[in-house]
Amino acid sequence: MPHKSLKRIGIILSLFIAFSIAILVGRYPVSLQKVFKILFDWGSTNYSAVERAVILDVRMPRALLAILVGGALSVSGAAFQGMFHNPLVDSGILGVSSGAGFGAALAIILFNRSYGMIYLLSFVFSIIAVLSSLLIGSVYDRHNKVMLVLGGVIVSSIFSALLSFMKYVADPYDQLPSIVFWLMGSLASVWYSDVLISLIPISIGMLIIFAFRWRLNVLSMGDKEAKSMGVHVGLIRIMIITGATLATAASVAVAGVVGWIGLVIPHVGRMLVGNDNRTLIPVSFVLGGTFLLLIDTLGRSITGSELPLSILTALIGGPFYIYLLLRTKGGGW
Image 1 (tube, rainbow, N blue to C red):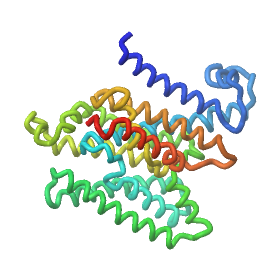
Image 2: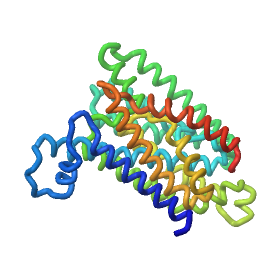
Image 3: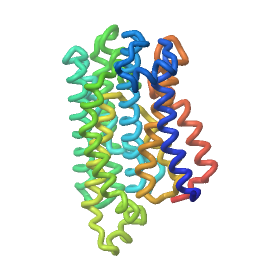
Image 4: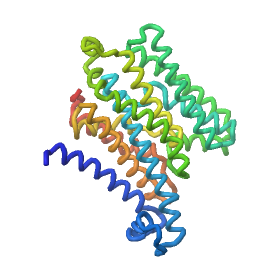
């Protein structure tokens, strides 16, 4: 079997292994044998109702959402890095995270931490942030990537200031801790409804990026080269931004702000399968899902209280990113 095929099989197997660990590991002990019976032998009675609820109602939806969110953030980061031809950008470059953070804080203050309103407002304001970035970027030249990034910086700063204002006016004993905890990202208290809510926008965003992933290879060569090959650069860029924004906004809405995945995981994918986005995009989805599954399992297992996701992704992602830069010396683009 070719070496590339073995590597891809190993990547897919890593997701299944991480998923199995996420289902098996937890504070409530359930043996491997009972886990198999609960998952594949629904007529069996060799397990208690509590054990069945722990596996099917607690760990299963959490693991499924971790795959969706991790995969979406990773693919969005890979798409933005390919589009901007810059290894230092991720899905938050156009203000998605800051817009979603403001929307969630607004919902926590105005609607008494209603999960439905947190999802809705964080999603809506992340979309508003990206549209504002596009609008600002088009004032001078709508095809200029630097202006687009500048628009994202401006919008991120504005929404960060609005988020700080929300923290300032929030109740310090009730609302402020909720805002801070949400901003650090978490998959606690996840239900199947959360998976379904995020599944539609993430699927649409992923399908758009998957459909245009081969054109990302052309955009990665530069705008002039892409235009000379007959590619409509502006249209492709808008489609990629739309897909990545939908996927990221839905992920942030249900899981909070989870950093580093969109920055680090695409680089790991490039080290394994190269720069071809036709392969890199699906590989990034699998690796992102695997990474967040392991991070979430670690976060709910190593301490008595659950650690927020962003703490672990930063502690692991930061040093690993330095290692990647030293190993690749910023090359490979």
